[in-house]
Length: 181
Figure (spheres, rainbow, N blue to C red):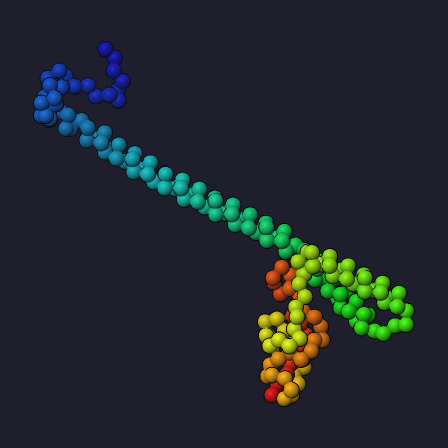
């Protein structure tokens, strides 16, 4: 009878001794290299599985990081374009502040300004309200400090240039006049 080389066969007497619970000296010596090899292979398998799990976790983390960066890039890609429109908004605000005898012309300027502002708001532009608020160096840039008793210390008295946020991030600080005592 042909048996594969990997299988170990026991003689009839050895099988009966094993059935009685007795071990033969021949079976103790033979499995030692096999057990050692099995243990080594089991350890190698565990190491490879651990390595595989770490690599899968690294891949998932890098995939998530790349996806987050892609979303942030797409979300804030319009930021530079919107920032380029801010001087145009400033010019419209100055033009609206000038008195003119031609009411149709003034109304046309106001409509263009409002449409431009609405479009930029849809993209994520938010105008900051500063009048009457407390001076915050993170969102305001003080151009003038005015000694006055009529307002609270460090309150914003006026605005030279409007500040804007884009999707919650500061795009341009407001240029303001601040009260000091």
